[in-house]
Length: 197
Image (cartoon, rainbow, N blue to C red; front, top):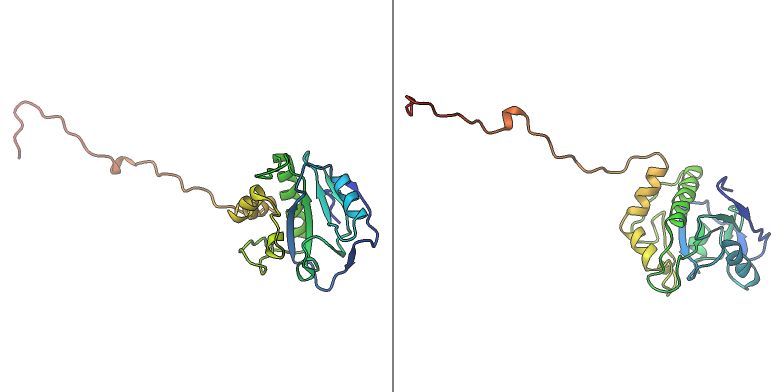
């Protein structure tokens, strides 16, 4: 599992299954509230059908949940979760737009980049279930991952931030060229005695 983990909440074999396919996706979720990541993991553990591979707190703390070798129960889709590492992220406030903190987002980017490097995944959100970055609402009638995080993912920012974290190159604005002397207009000061010729 990831070297970025600060704490571990061990699920053992509760609320998870063996994977049927190799890991090839990452699915970020939101907790639908400002929750301590250990508390969220505990709530999932005590439930009859929820879990995640990782939990990220508002302060950026990363908690390991279900071991990566197992499929967590997070997205309501066996087909997705058997291929995905799933990550629950705490919100920084309750209610719309379900904002997450900069520290939580930074940890999400770092963790996703680490997963993508280790499993040779090219980050790609393409708006469908075929992408390597998927979201919960693709599989169930839910608001997850929340309006704030969904906009960041759909805009391409998340994908680009992960690629940059992996050591890749993100597009930079093309600078406006500085005019060279030959590009500048030429001026002549008229002197007494000058003619048009």
